Image (cartoon, rainbow, N blue to C red; front, top):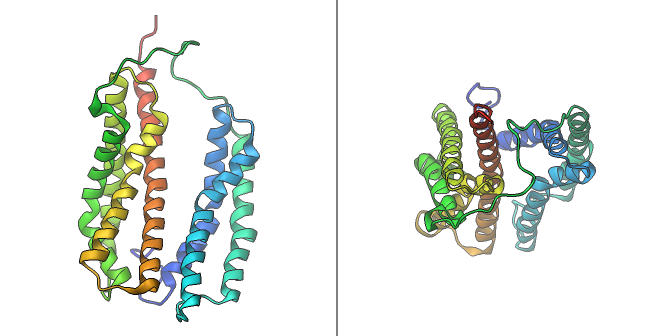
Length: 280
């Protein structure tokens, strides 16, 4: 939206307002995708699935923001939001975000067909042979997190300097290009790591694919620690709590985003290779 000039990025609060509205209006997409896939794999507690979907981001965000805002209040900072603004944000989520998630979840549940496996599977789980150390979850998380992070590390510095410093960021075309590179690298790394895991006869790829590339969020948080210690002049409880609170939330957002991209990329890849197998 900033690249297309749909709003003035230099206007105070324009990006925050756009982010809140976009999140509230796109809640129906998350409800639909989550409920649709949950019913495909045989899930029956679809109501709890919708509640988890709508809480997976909003609850950590609200808790982090509450702690940061409380510290601002306690120290008499002018950055603390008044109670009326808090009630307005809660009203937007209760009247727009949550109902749209429920509506999307109902549509997803009703339109879901049984999971169409590309080939037959055995009823008895196959024994998994011992795996070498370089195929462990920790190594996959290290490799799968570091490579996407290295693709955005340079741009990440300018973003931090803009958000926490006095710089003005204007290269939104480059930012969009780097974002596309991040998604592409994350998907490719996920497919490669999943292939290595399956080649070792380890079929437990579901959560491994989420954690492998989702760990990029951990590298981003570690970079924020480095930025606070070496690149910024921030100090005091207000700045420290605000910086690390929102940095932790940013890392969590990247974990959700890249973990989702990683899982669906691996699922698409596995469906593609198994649908071409010739079964006896």
